[in-house]
Amino acid sequence: MIDVVYTGDIRSTQDVARKNHQLFFDELSKISTYEVHQFTAPDGEKNFTPCPFNRGGKDEYWIKDRLRRGQGGGVQVWQFMNAVRLTKNPFIIRMRTDNWFTKKSIDVVIKELKAIMNKEYEIGFFGSNWLEGAIGEEHDKILLSKRDQLEVPIRTEDFVIVAKRDGLKDFDETLNGLIAIKGANGIRSGNKCFRFIIPQKSEAYKHLCQIYLMRTTYNKDYPTDKQVCYDYLMSYCKSEHETGKMKPALDWWRNKEWK
Image 1 (tube, rainbow, N blue to C red):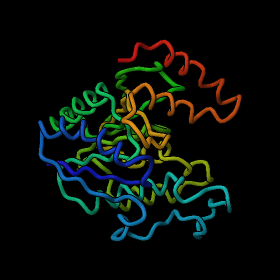
Image 2: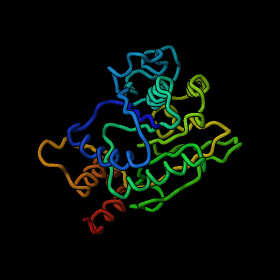
Image 3: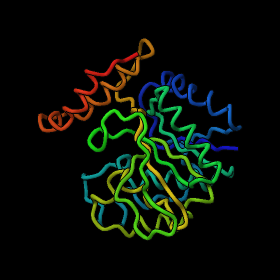
């Protein structure tokens, strides 16, 4: 049995998101029963512990007007660990409301879920990275942390997280590790903070694959992978400098043979 937990803010067009996510759930149902839980802000947080990462709190690294609550990596991990605390099944999948699954990415997540259920490793992180590694990779599996390894990665993709429940750090240890971070930059984004859910006893991998984020409200037709990918890439092109950094990814998008 699997718990699927949605955390974060409710973003993008949810009718479109639900239709896309159902493609993943259809495949998930072939290997296990599952329960879907809505822990999105703010209503889904009603049974959560108080958040130590709200701006305006006593922690010295919160700089006025630098960080919004919804941007805090610490908040994202706090939401996820509360979702873990409030569910019970042996495996857990964390999802965002703005995830966009391609067929290839569903195949990757399902394959690696089976590996985790078969006790090959404990935690998988899934997402796409357009600045590192092979751009457009359909599946690049990268070891993050070996069992009994003291070092943890600096950052990891966190669009989808699949974990064996007893392979995660406990709630207090995870939050205390985040609270100890000095400096606003270290707590700013989820891809810097989710490493704190990995205990020394667990093995973790990150998986670069074709999961995108929906950055546009799709009010009319169900969009294509090509359209969602383009909107996602362009969301990082707010300046000439950023557009230059994204040029290899945009070239890949133009040259790809989309179905």
